[in-house]
Length: 222
Image (cartoon, rainbow, N blue to C red; front, top):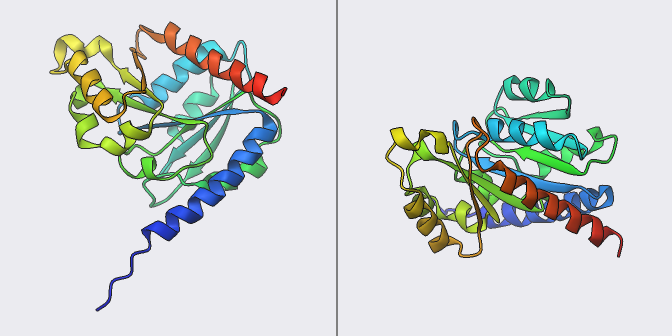
């Protein structure tokens, strides 16, 4: 029996659709961040902390990816920002075609679009959606070796957030070792250490995202 490898054509097709999505986001002048992490790493908590502060200075849309349900999107919508839900039913990631289905539902321009991808360290890293960059979250209970076990995500992510610093006294996680492992895969990664529960470390994250927003505004004026 002959085997047919279809992964490359699928990814090539996805990349083309991602470029088309990117064109739409560029016309809206939106900074799009694709947030990827394992289940329970704190993606939603991280987004909610960002939204609570940044909604005062910029227009935010959250695209919530889940296999089923609207638990997180309902929680985020109560913060007073717009939310669009994507349910994949069986797929373990968002891809460019799923994201494209959201575009007609976007009726106004947003400064910042936060996409919460499906909880997974593998598949979401492989599929671009038209984002400006990927942001990976590594939580302290997961262990400091995850960048070595799941290298593709940590290689591709421009920003990596180490979350749940408040749990460091209770878990076997070495921040220095985690940073060393991240830098083995991605020496250029921008790394933040935060707690989405206490707010520790978020000031630096806010400054970074505001810098990216300002850079996008300047680019659009050229």
